[in-house]
Structure formats: C-alpha cells, structure tokens
Amino acid sequence: MAVLFLGTADMEVKIVASTTIDSLGACQGVSYLLGKVYLYGDREVGMIRTYALNSNQLIYTGQEIKLTQNGQDVINHPTGIAHNGSKHTFVGNSIRLNPEGTQWKAVIYAVDWEGLQRTKTLDGNLLNVIEDDICIQGTRPEYVQYEGKWYVATADYGPKSNEVRLYDPQILSKAKKTSEAGVLFKKFSCSAWVQNLHWIPSKGILVLIQNQIEGRKWRFTFIDLKKSVASGQQQVLNVVDIDKSDELEGFTLLEGSSTGMAVTSSRHQNVHLVTVK
Image 1 (tube, rainbow, N blue to C red):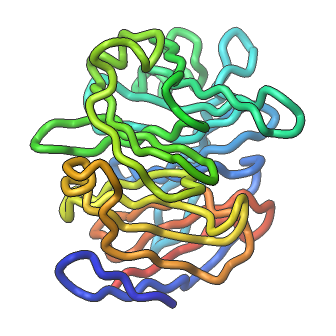
Image 2 (cartoon, rainbow, N blue to C red; image 1 turned 30 degrees about the vertical axis):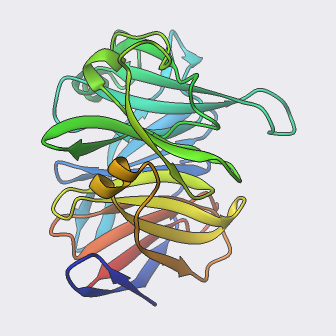
C-alpha cells in the first residue's frame, strides 16, 4: 500500500486483485479507450488485444490486432499507444539492434486506429513511419495537454540523462525523423527507467511508469507537467514504490479514476487491479 499526493488530497493506492492474461507474450502496456481495455505485447508478432470490463474483470472480446503488414512483423515490441480521438494515432516500437540489448532503435508509427479495429492488421492502416532519432533510449508515446493544446509525450528508458519530450502531433504525423524542424516542442529531464507514460487530464499530472532498477520493481512518479515544462526538469509531486519484484510495464486509470490497472511482462499474474482512494 502507498499514499499518493496528487496536489489536492492524499490518496491511497492498493493492489486488490491480480490475474493472468495469456496470449500477450510479454505484456508491454495497457490503454483504456472508450470503455475498452487494450493490452499489447510482443508475442510471436507484436499485437493488441481488446477486453471489456465487467465488474472490474477483463473479458476478452475476441478482437486481436496483429501489428503486421503483408504478414510480416512490423511493430514487434509495442511500447505505447497515443490515441485521443483525433485523426492522429501513434504506436511506439523499440527495436533491439544487438543480442546484449545495449543498442536500440526507436520508431513511432502513425496509424489509422479505426482501420485497425476493422481489419485487425496494419495493412492499409500504416500511415507513416517516423524514426525517433532524438530519443536517448526507446520511445513510448502518450497524448498530453499543455496550455490547451495536445502533444505526444514520450520518454527514455535508461540509467541517466533521460528526458520527457513533447512532439507536435500534426508535424510528427508527416515527419520521417523527430529531429526534423518543428517536431519537438519542449523537453525536460526525468528520472531513470521509464517504461511508459499515463496522462491524468483532470489533474494536469503526468505519471512516469518506471522500474526502481533496470527491468525490476515498481515505481510511479507523479509530476506536474506544466511546471516541468517551464523549469526544464521534472517537478515531482510524489514517488510511489511498490514492493513487487517483476517488471512494471504499464498503467492506466479506468473510468471514474478510482481504479487503475497495472501490467507487467511476467507470464503469470501479469495484470493487476489497483484501487485509488
């Protein structure tokens, strides 16, 4: 159990239930969109599965999206889904370049989200491929709002010199590299081992979903986005460490923001219901 300070009141966060969801490979994240839960992982190909919530239980809808094109694995290691209902949806991918895992290539894909729901592959739905060449290690896109405008935020997974960067989605959708003029709006330094991001619009808070050490143990860092952008470094509201030894990969608040879901890369007990009070 941990206590969160989200700027206005103390909040208690507790893992209340854990379950095993199979057929994901190593689960890489979770998104809650329009009443549905999307779990994504790196099975034999990168994929997204859709679940309904019934009394906080996940019910598989039968919809599985394979992140392939012409039968070939494209987004093999999905690391984030940025979708806010606009015409620009982005999916991240971190590509391992050597067996040791010390060299990576980060890629952001602009996709037709509605098309993916219909056809269940990237065929005809892959709109653009953008190399995230200004990243330090990896990419994990998530929509955030700053001063009334939407941006695609991403962050690095490394031991030091990490950043959260905000990209202009309109320019990003047409770019080939994030180093192109106009793509990067703002950036600020952040702490290590960020696996994913989650935006809480009602609070103006960005959650860094992290590991305490490389690939192990749970950490949530709650930051004030506006103050972080202004200062150039993360402005921390609270850090929550949870004593679990596996690799936290993703987190989302569910409808009403009183419950959340955290996922790990473990093969068993990889999805956890979290209450927030």
